[in-house]
Length: 171
Image 1 (cartoon, rainbow, N blue to C red):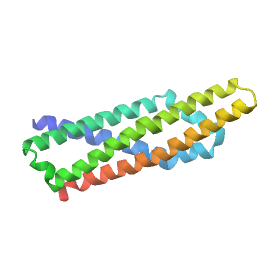
Image 2: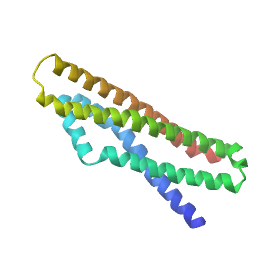
Image 3: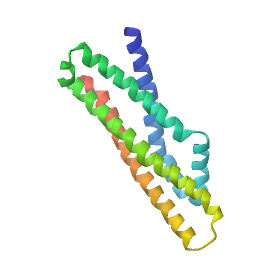
Image 4: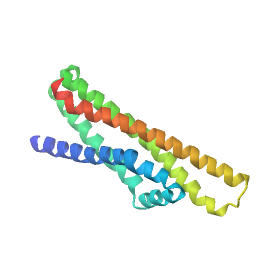
């Protein structure tokens, strides 16, 4: 059991660092840079998608959460559930809920909006100037704003998760 806990902690912490770091890099640096680059910034986003960024991140997040839930279950089971009422248990619960909600917002809002905006952007080349093209550009802009807003929510929720888990043992 000790070896399993060590492996689960390594998976949870290493992949969690990657997940949270990738989101913070995206929100703090990449997203503003892409926005400031104008239409050329979408080329960078297209390359990220081509390299699998939007597919890798949910896998990393999922593995992080599965390892965390396994650790949570091991601790809760070892103390017949009393652990969940302790400061440590409550801290890890807050962190887990924040991470899971962050994942859901990231996957179903941020990722979905980004993928849809890219798909619509690629179809722009086929449209001549006119009302249909303008409507498509407005939809792309709406999706970009939605992805940007949701990415800030994800970053905030992941910050809560990291902070809660970092101090849980001392609460």
